Image (cartoon, rainbow, N blue to C red; front, side):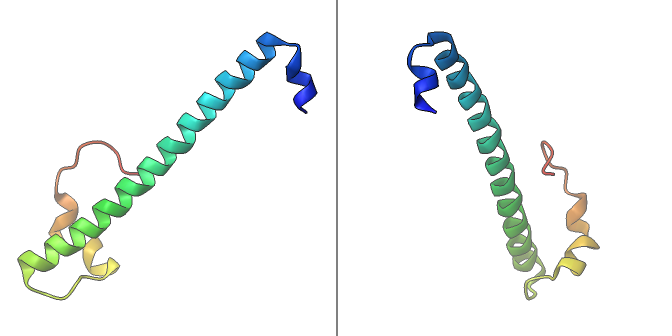
Length: 76
Protein backbone atom coordinates (compact mmCIF):
# COMPACT_ATOMS: atom_id res chain seq x y z
CA UNK A 1 0.00 0.00 0.00
CA UNK A 2 2.87 2.34 0.77
CA UNK A 3 4.23 2.16 -2.80
CA UNK A 4 1.07 3.91 -4.08
CA UNK A 5 1.87 7.06 -2.09
CA UNK A 6 5.62 7.21 -2.77
CA UNK A 7 5.64 9.11 -6.06
CA UNK A 8 2.28 10.88 -5.95
CA UNK A 9 2.40 14.07 -3.87
CA UNK A 10 -1.26 14.99 -4.39
CA UNK A 11 -2.40 11.54 -3.34
CA UNK A 12 -0.44 12.01 -0.12
CA UNK A 13 -2.12 15.37 0.45
CA UNK A 14 -5.55 13.88 -0.21
CA UNK A 15 -4.88 10.99 2.16
CA UNK A 16 -3.77 13.43 4.87
CA UNK A 17 -6.90 15.55 4.42
CA UNK A 18 -9.13 12.48 4.66
CA UNK A 19 -7.28 11.35 7.76
CA UNK A 20 -7.81 14.72 9.43
CA UNK A 21 -11.52 14.71 8.58
CA UNK A 22 -12.01 11.17 9.89
CA UNK A 23 -10.10 12.03 13.05
CA UNK A 24 -12.39 15.03 13.61
CA UNK A 25 -15.52 12.87 13.42
CA UNK A 26 -14.07 10.23 15.75
CA UNK A 27 -13.13 12.81 18.40
CA UNK A 28 -16.46 14.59 18.04
CA UNK A 29 -18.28 11.34 18.70
CA UNK A 30 -16.02 10.60 21.69
CA UNK A 31 -16.63 14.09 23.10
CA UNK A 32 -20.43 13.70 22.79
CA UNK A 33 -20.39 10.36 24.60
CA UNK A 34 -18.15 11.76 27.35
CA UNK A 35 -20.49 14.73 27.82
CA UNK A 36 -23.54 12.45 28.04
CA UNK A 37 -21.83 10.28 30.62
CA UNK A 38 -20.71 13.28 32.67
CA UNK A 39 -24.21 14.78 32.53
CA UNK A 40 -25.88 11.55 33.67
CA UNK A 41 -23.47 11.12 36.58
CA UNK A 42 -23.77 14.77 37.61
CA UNK A 43 -27.58 14.78 37.51
CA UNK A 44 -27.79 11.63 39.62
CA UNK A 45 -25.43 12.87 42.31
CA UNK A 46 -26.89 16.38 42.40
CA UNK A 47 -30.41 15.01 42.71
CA UNK A 48 -29.35 12.63 45.47
CA UNK A 49 -27.63 15.46 47.30
CA UNK A 50 -30.57 17.87 47.16
CA UNK A 51 -33.29 15.32 47.72
CA UNK A 52 -31.35 13.49 50.49
CA UNK A 53 -32.15 10.12 49.01
CA UNK A 54 -30.27 7.20 47.57
CA UNK A 55 -29.15 7.55 43.98
CA UNK A 56 -32.22 7.51 41.70
CA UNK A 57 -32.80 4.76 39.19
CA UNK A 58 -33.24 5.44 35.48
CA UNK A 59 -37.02 5.20 35.83
CA UNK A 60 -37.13 7.67 38.70
CA UNK A 61 -34.75 9.99 36.90
CA UNK A 62 -36.80 10.06 33.70
CA UNK A 63 -39.99 11.01 35.58
CA UNK A 64 -38.47 13.60 37.89
CA UNK A 65 -38.29 17.37 37.74
CA UNK A 66 -34.61 17.13 36.77
CA UNK A 67 -35.41 16.52 33.12
CA UNK A 68 -36.88 20.02 32.91
CA UNK A 69 -33.55 21.67 33.72
CA UNK A 70 -32.63 23.77 30.68
CA UNK A 71 -29.44 22.57 29.02
CA UNK A 72 -27.17 24.18 26.51
CA UNK A 73 -26.65 22.23 23.33
CA UNK A 74 -27.83 18.79 22.36
CA UNK A 75 -26.61 15.74 24.23
CA UNK A 76 -27.92 13.07 21.91
